[in-house]
Image (cartoon, rainbow, N blue to C red; front, top):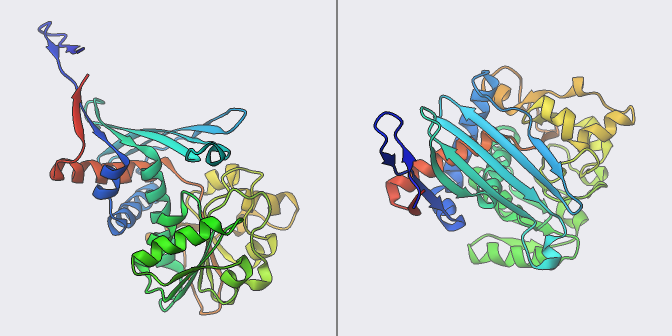
Length: 337
């Protein structure tokens, strides 16, 4: 067992690290608490308190690995995340997303915990959509359409269910089989959910979430009802796209971070490249909306849209919440390094 040496006395000091599995993370971070953590993260970012450099992307032949550090002083959160997205993994019987998050002591830099990152990513990504939905969807929204039923989809559904009294969840996926499995899982939890095709899912829906890796729009603009709120979650590169340009053009658009969206959000970049849209038309960020610096929904007929890129500050806020609750609940396993 290796120990760090105290430079003053020459003695070795054990470094304890709490290891938190996916189950530990989920137990320590219920969706309502995750949404609250996102509220804090986006507000600190908008106030200029956060440090979150643009993520480093390493492209491999079969996917990408991302390095995402962040510091939130108000949340006492200092983290570094490595996450890999390999779309072909499900065909190998593996998850498309793998990740690890290292939580550091903000006073000393000492590593405090190692968290399973895919579950944390899925929860905090869902929580951002939940926050956007809470801020922008009509209060009496009842019908939720979810396009895509992969690894992110469950938490996207739970996030919307946490902020609105949803009467019906309609799920659509490319094959239909994954949508049927997710619908059954939600039904077992008491949710009125069913698998349908995309058009049936979207038509008349109050809230629409797309969580896919598509490079072309996954729904028709004509099917989007007046007053709908849309969360675009899955398209995470410049060449991916989930929403038609016509939907982007007629929606009131919000992002998590303008610079990150301009660099990575294909849903916005593609219409800009085509000369149909400008980033000047983006209303602003969720953080600005939380601080009252920009307006939210202004009519029952307005279409609002949140384009999520995913930020390291979300990981930091979520990890800090997980670690605090895990320590209080005695979750995880402590090891000495």
